[in-house]
Image (cartoon, rainbow, N blue to C red):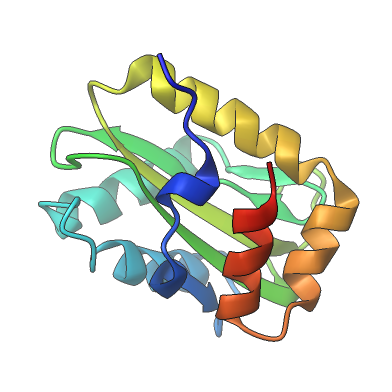
Length: 152
């Protein structure tokens, strides 16, 4: 089984600068982006699943990063949106710090192993502070996209 990379899934148009300063608003902005994908057949169920997942447990993993993620029958294949807000979003993270990067991931309910591998690979990549800082300091979504594409 091939291990997928974020750079193989993330599209340039799915990288945004978040306007909201709160978790709900930021999630809604990213859901709107993800729902532009033809890989998501039911936007309403995707949105409900993201918020239900957050209610269960925050996806703010600390260090200014959140990775809201769901697997659903109505998602045909992996889709990722990236939102950034250098000044941070109030997110209820495990370290109580604001979130600066949000990687939202949708996957099919049949993509179990690939899903786990993609998440673990992303978390590993985000432990690299230099990588995270480059994304935060990039001038626009094109530059963010290029940084992610260059990363092994």
